[in-house]
Length: 269
Image (cartoon, rainbow, N blue to C red):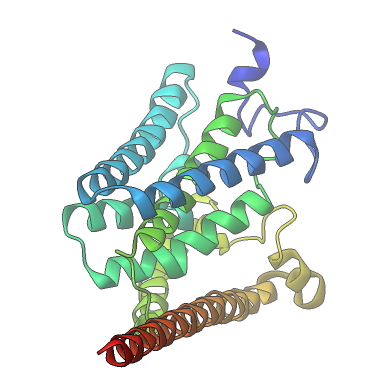
């Protein structure tokens, strides 16, 4: 086992990490893209039994990924409050389990409106970039967030997940209610769950810190959430509109063909 494999945040050196948008980062994003394409095809062509099996497999892998992290940290004696599953994306694991145990539109909305953008933003601006690319925690962080992104994408592609902007109030309330105890946890242990202590490395919240300082940067949390939701639901609305237009054209073409067939049949009589 290489020394870099067991490096954690506490022991990472200044030169141990990997750059944003470098070869390592782009490779993992490529893995996400390939898996996303494959699962979307499977979601469209697979049977209902296959779709359920894929969803439960992805959820089980997500749970095992998180469990493996804690086993690893325990084995090397690096347990710390920072590794508790209280980060915004870690909460997504519990939402996935909620949906797996009891599929419902509220958990589905959280997967689409909170877990999906959270995972994609984390993958675009990996907060674990200070770790060696070959470290266990770097691998865990990439795989965990990829799985978290793939689950709502697969459910969306299969048609099971039907996001509705009218349920966004629930997502906002969920974030607010869960952020309150998280804030106290952060104050007690000096952690940064929900980015309530500092912006983190390289992500868009850093732009707000430059303008408003700390804790002023927190104004960026609702602003960014609103911007991402506008983009998400806007894109979804455009796709749905395009799908309806395509369906209407197809129906019109069928009607025209049926009308021509009737005319030909009538003329032959």
